[in-house]
Image (cartoon, rainbow, N blue to C red; front, side):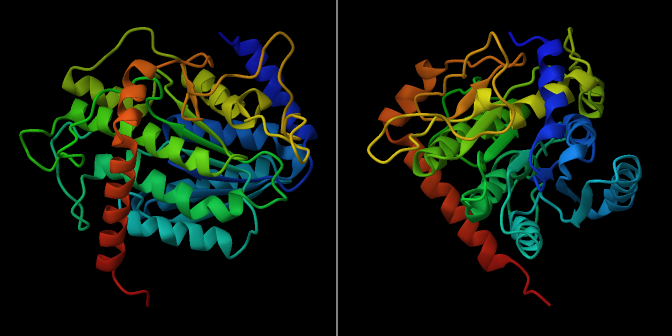
Length: 341
């Protein structure tokens, strides 16, 4: 377990990082994402970060006020709003294009958008369940589209953090990955499909992009507005983590070298870690990745091992089946997207 004191001490060192850190937040209009954005802005103000945050149209005005407030309290940073509905895969392209028009690199991509569809499945115009789009399809699309900016050599230690269910993977309904059959769809099936497909797809990306550090974090029950809403449907787990603690731990996962992949820095090997962001705290070791190459992290910052499920899925090629299915979904969303005016 990583103590909260260690987390906060690490986060306080963000101010000493070189200037110009670029971070993109998808899902930071409330809950863990919003708290992480606020703490990141506060701690990194000495390094003049450039922060982009995505909001759907219905909450854009309120989120713009949040960003404006951050600009007043932490004026060394730059805070930019991108209005997009990330329940639609095609809107992710709009997000990436907006960032790419102003930046040549992205250091941190932080994704926490999502919800549980307690009222049942109600498809978007793309024919997808929005609770699955926000938690899987749009997140994966964002990682894929941002790869050129994340892989820019100017980025010393590119980092992707996806807040969902790393380490809780379960067998998939392999004949209906999108759970389109009503008899297959449920709140929990959708949740576990998103988490498991997310891990498999992110592992594939990690294998092809060895400098990219990918963290799939399961924060456990956190006292967010979303969990408060879930209580209306009988879901009220005990021992909920305070939102402020979850936000601090999220920033730690996004910025500490404990969750940076170790790469060779000399031709022919020779080892050595990446230049990195914030050094690994004394008394801790670099976290171990999954066999597929990403960090599956528990609520208190420790790596988890779910090879009992994941090894079988990889051995049978389910990861490739998930990847190919997802690319077909993306192609269909692109072809159905309205023309750009």
